[in-house]
Length: 272
Image (cartoon, rainbow, N blue to C red; front, side, top):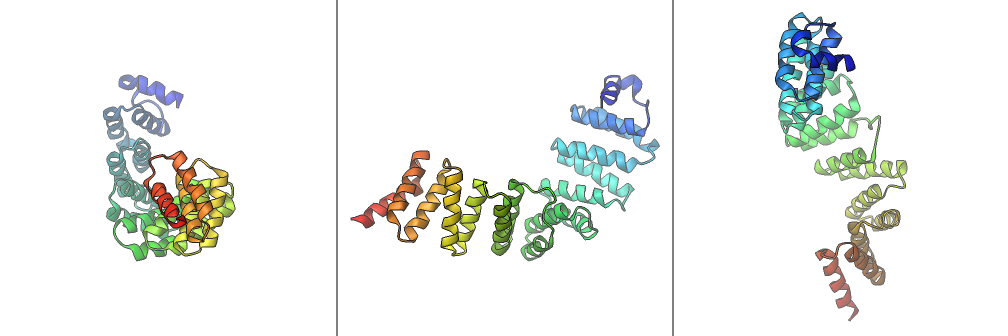
């Protein structure tokens, strides 16, 4: 990288120096530094003599994608795939970029190719399901999401995202399964407990929902929504005093919380 940046500094005099790895590094460094016109000039100069021009375009695409210049990323991934159609890792990258750019229908065939070929099936499967959902193909999206393997490097945000996607494609059963797995993996995470509790409540499992929401407020008592939803469940299960306590906690955290205010009024009305 240091050598590449040195070449960037001496762009006019040193552009053609070094091997193809260094030339690729120069291109990426230019993009990282926001010197996009120079980066495009470098690609135009380097590509005809590169032993693997598809790799040059793919690395430029990745750099643009990391910088959220998705149209530029898509353009370079398309060139890479045209030069090396057998490189399905590039099909995955192109599909992901199209998806992120809001072009879900265009993303589907590229993501499908990558997923069917077993290219990072956890990521490809999730992204294919998301693209299918974005194209209005909910049933297909649900099938893909159900068959895709779990993430190889899971985290809480990914787990919640999978559950949200499952709900979006009308598969609440999958959402609950994902959240159950996440709760066992991260039992001390309040956000997972809250999300799982809400999913169980919607499914009619009030006892399970109460258990999860009680854990959520114990783990992180600063979330007003957790207290409010627990208050609602307490009210539904004949525990008005406990419901009032939780509703007041929600209001102490969020004084302008109309749902908590309304619940308290309803509880006070019942008590008269």
